[in-house]
Structure formats: structure tokens, C-alpha cells
Image (spheres, rainbow over the protein chains, first blue to last red):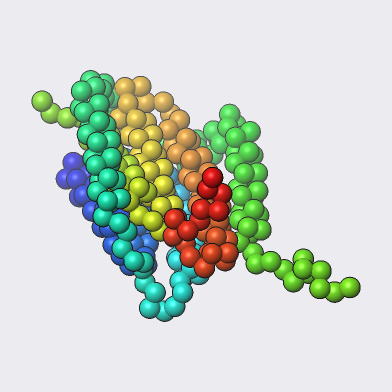
Length: 171
Length: 105
């Protein structure tokens, strides 16, 4: 059981770390999509199947496409794969800060006695998820729908080019 | 001393969070910074699932609900963030973070 967890965790962490250190932006984006797929595999391992499929649909399917289009739309030329390298000082200080945060987090996790469940909880049925979404969480579901609508319309408005009609060229 | 599964999941999500944090701090490409933020959000979601699955009192589906709403909000955030990146590129012809300093005091 734990072997699968270690494989998933190592794969996810390795792809994420390599993606954050590569120069080529498209390679980074593709590796990050692999990392999101690894997180979906973790959800499957943990028994949250519905969340795993939601992760695949939202991240691996939708957000990855948006990211790839953003990468392609912000390139100067076909050979413009990346950037001039970031400064070494920034990278070193970021590594120091990240390592410190990781040390603090690992120390806190390891020194906390966490009580684990003795028995495995029953698998969540999609039917009960739907009943909960439509029952106690109906208001939150509506609010999330409004948030998504407003955010996507706002994204289109922000990203759309200035229309010629706004320049008042016609009398 | 042996670690429980909950410890392992929390260590995994801590490491993923720090990878995202290092990416956010070290890179000057706006798209990569956004992707680092997404990684940190995903690490938080892993914590929710871990506590739901291995916690002492497994509530029916509370953690799953939380993660579903978090994924929805993260999708909205990614769309708006990438639209902002494209808008900045249209004005500056560049997406380096250091170039977008018009509001700098």
C-alpha cells in the first residue's frame, strides 16, 4: 500500500521540482501537467475518487490548456523558448527561504502526535456527495457558480484587445 | 518510531508546498510564478484529503466538499491570472515580473 504512495509522491515532487528549474517554459508547463496528474493519482490512492476525476478534468484538462495558450501567446518568436537566466542571488535566497520553510514544516509535522483513524472510513458515494452539494451546501454551490461566471467574464474582458470602436474614430 | 500514513501525507504536501514557494520566489517569469501558486494550492488540497481520509474522526465527505470548492476557486484564479499575464504582455511586450513596475512608488 505504501509503495504506491512513495512512487506517487516521488514522481509528483520530482516533476514539480524539475519544472520549476527548467529554462524552457513549454517543458515546464508540460512537466507541471504531469505533476497535477500525480496529485490526481494521490487522490485516487487516498480513496477520494470524485476529487481525483475533478482534478483531472479541471487541472489536467482545462487549466493546462489555458496555461499552454498563455505560454504560446506571450512568445516573441518561434525560437523564444525561455528567458535570460534569472539571477543567481535570487535563486539562492529563494532556496534558503524554501528550505527554511520546509524545515519548519517538517519539524512541526514530525513533532506533532497525530491520532490516526483505526478503521478505514467507508468510501464516499457520488450520490451522497450530490445530496450534500444540493442540500447543506447549496448556497455555497450557487456562490461558486457566480464566482466562476464573474471570473471568466472578467478574464475575457481583461485579455481582449482594445476594440477600434473605443477609439472614437468614426464621427 | 514509525510514521503513520497521515504523517507521510503531510510531509508530502509540505515538500510540494515548498517546491511551489521556491518557484514563486526564484523565477521572474510571470506564468511560472502563477504555476507555483497553483502548486501551493494543490498542496493545501492534499492536506484536506489527508485529514479527511486518515483523521481521527472521519466525517462523511467534509474534506471532499472543501477540496471541490477549492478546486473551483483555483480554476477561476488561474483564468484571471493568465488573462492578466496576457494583458501585461500586450502593454509591455514582455512578461518579466521586473518589467511590470508601473505602480512602483
